[in-house]
Length: 54
Image: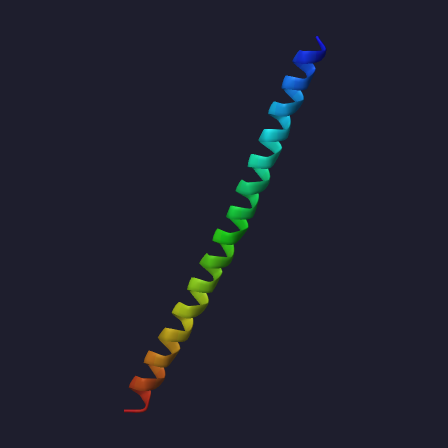
């Protein structure tokens, strides 16, 4: 029975590690999406200003 508990704990630890990695990746993707939106806004502003100044 002790061996089974060790195996279960090991599996739970591995799932916790995987969950932490996925959470970090999700945050990274959220930051990238926000960055992409900010860059798109800046590009659009530059294009708009360029057309207004012609």
